[in-house]
Length: 92
Image (cartoon, rainbow, N blue to C red; front, side, top):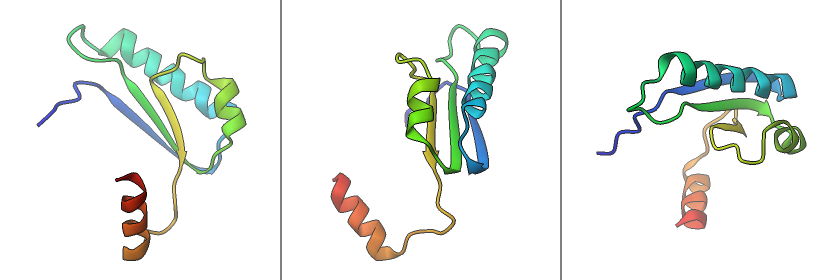
């Protein structure tokens, strides 16, 4: 078993991702790193899940060296068995 030893902040958005959402998450990550995290813990990770993401907004809102905030789309349904097998085959 591997322990992450890091706070993970997750924000679920029901609409399209906006640059304000990324700025807000970055503020939360910075707060936890400065006020809550101990020296023995890894940096805080922020994850934004949204119904629609805008790669342009993500690319130009986050700093290039960003390794702490991630944005991705979520689906309103679970994939069926064939879709899961196809995804697994693609990544394995």
